[in-house]
Image (cartoon, rainbow, N blue to C red):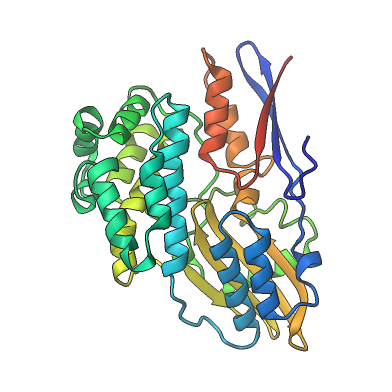
Length: 359
């Protein structure tokens, strides 16, 4: 196993009779927030978060700022979601233009990915809409987002984009890697009571941030929990279930929604904050991998205690969504590659490995 400071996820699968008999998910991700943040001012803590987190750095920095402001009595102050939404869009585009085409044996689109990463902020929404219309969807996002079950099937079969061909492959067979873990509520569904409960457990229960649960159950978080009600997503879920293809489609659906969300106010919050009790602040930020929470306690203007609850800890819980998805894999050829694809669909924020053992 890796000894890298950010840790990694190792998945050990036992195979018996051509199927997955057991799943062992081992995380070496260290819980470093308390050690790194203690004694720092809010400004120092925010700057540090942007430096030490190689992925979703903008979301991490914003979570620190929002949590510290709430701890100082700022409450759920309005935040400009644009930088976080741009980061989220780039992460989705990376998966759709680079990672998933490679996994499917198709050509990655590095040129469009680099263009999106370099475009100035004031041109980002326009550039993203152009990418969706001309490359990913082959039609305006608003038209594609209105597609029902028949429309989505027609797009998969006859759409001219490489993305449509990718989903046509997924749609030809039953979706694989089905998770039955309930979805973690998206940020819009959280209230003060829920936030206080989560903050208390994060602060008081030593192992909670490494192995979280919600209302006694493991939970799945990600783009899927935010866009399940959109017509293409609802159509896919009703036909295929919540598996590998659904998680990938959710990224495309959310990416298609983002040009409008970047150019005007959205009813779906990206950043929220609460003060569960005096001197303590909690912030939630929607990221490409799911819901990120930070909890801070300030004393004398400096961080006294800090906790971070990342999406990876929900999705890679030892008995959570990934474990369920891998256990549900049907026997058959290419079991190893299917297991790796399912693991990638939940997108850990660190390196991962999948090891097989025969019973």
